[in-house]
Length: 337
Ligand code: EPU
Image (cartoon, rainbow, N blue to C red; front, top):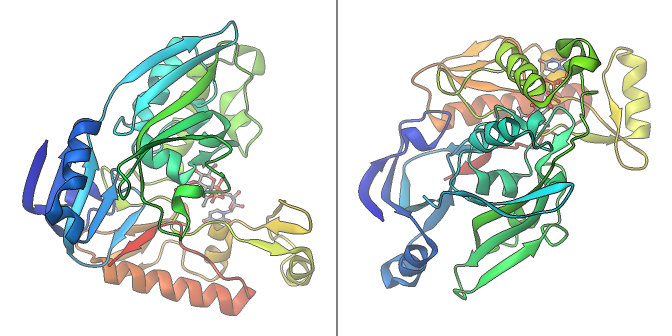
């Protein structure tokens, strides 16, 4: 167990904001987690459980306890002719899991290569990219209830997954801390390469394999997305909005080239990056904050930005898109403070 006071969170938020937490507590197993949660001081304090902070925007120092899992391990629990089932500690780096699966020849998560963050947060956030989402492979999510001190295993259905959403994210402030995720991978994978320019990046289909798909996804990401290890960012700042068909029809008259794709009945999704680009923000800088020059959906910390400055730029983007398109962008990034 690790307990630190006035702890810098620079390595726990991919925006690389210079913020501190009053306390930082990291547990290595469920027993240690239980010990922390049962502690009276913990129960009276403000607290927040985080992963690697790849989806967080700290608006100021955190005047409470930041809780972090160090539960690691990738274990094969069982196999069938077609599938292999893995139990993974919430603190494993997501991309290490993908690399391991691809190395073994197990399919189902190769398109999710290169996504920053840890396994537990990936399952909470329902990470997705290039036509795949983690929900497609989740069998179960093991949790610990910080109010009742009971373990609860959620089936995939009980996780109630949606686009970048799950039961664990919903606003009824659920007290569940993810300890392990259980996923199911395919021994004879079907490749899913129809998203955007993935097929083009891959070349001929007959030469395709999991390693090539992973490499192609990593190459596309490298070309388009800023590496948080080099320049602070939290990936897509907003989710892609879904609008009513009638609203879309009004827009297409004014913007015949508007990209879109159908989602649920009567709705279309518009890439938020396109909307932001149309409002003239792409590649622009505002003090210490930049709008990425290759993907307008990503805000970057140019070095010394504060959470407030990033939030201010996000707000002016939100207002501009609302005014020009009557579409309300919703942050994917979670504001803290
Ligand atoms: N576009 C623009 N200008 C831009 C950016 C995008 O016009 O500056 C338009 C283009 O038409 C492009 C389309 O938007 O074809 C889609 O762009 P892209 O393929 O980059 O995907 P996205 O919808 O912007 C989503 C996810 C990403 C994920 C990619 C690939 C969300 C909020 N974002 O972005 O996820 O990597 O698809 O699957 O759904 C993340 O969540 O942090 C993230 C990076």
